[in-house]
Length: 257
Image (cartoon, rainbow, N blue to C red; front, side, top):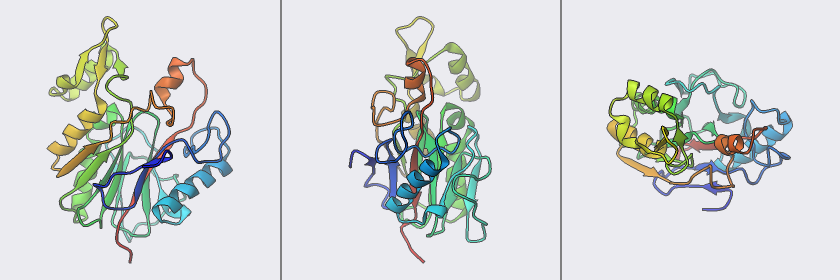
C-alpha cells in the first residue's frame, strides 16, 4: 500500500482508494483532485483522472462517474450502454459494470467509498455512501444491480472515510437516521459535547452490506478527517471553510475481452 493509493487484497481486481497525493492541481486542491464540481481548472482534473485511469488499466475517457446526490440510485453499465464523458453521467450514487474496458468510480471527501467485486472478478461496483445514501439503501441497490448482472459471492471494501472517533453529529441527524432505520442506534454513542453523538459510518456501511448478502466485507479503517493525505469536508469546516478537492475511488473488472 503506497502513500498515494490504498488497495485491498480481498477484491482481486484492479482498483484503488486514491488519496489527495500524486496529482497536478495547485492549492487548495492539491493535488489529485478528481472532482468536476470544484472550481479547480478542468485541465487539472482531467489529468488527475487520467492518472487514476491508468493506475487501474482503463482509458481515461472510460473512467466513469455520476452526478452524486446522496441517493439510492445505482446505474448499471453494460455492453449496450452509451458511455458518457468522464464524470459527467446522470444523477446517482453507485455504478456497476460487467464491461472489461470500463472503470467506475465515486468521489468523496468524508463519505464512505465502497468498492465491490464478484468472486470471479467479472462484475464490479463503486458506491458513494454518506449517511443519507447508506440509510437510504444505496449499498443494497448496488448489490442488487450486481446480482442482476450475474454476480455471485460478492466482496466489498469500505474505504477511507470519516471515522467513528471523528464523526460528531447533532440530534437532528441521529433522529433522521433512526427514523429510516430503527436498528441504527447501536452505531451512535454519546459524545463529550452535550446533546451530540458520535456515529460509526464505516461499521454501519459494513453491517448493511453483510445484511444485503455480501460474502466478505473489509473496513480499511482510515479516517479522512485526521489523515492529512485525504481531503475532508469536516476538516475544512473546522478550519473555517474555503475550497477543497475530492479524492476518487475506482475499480474495474479482472477479465479482459
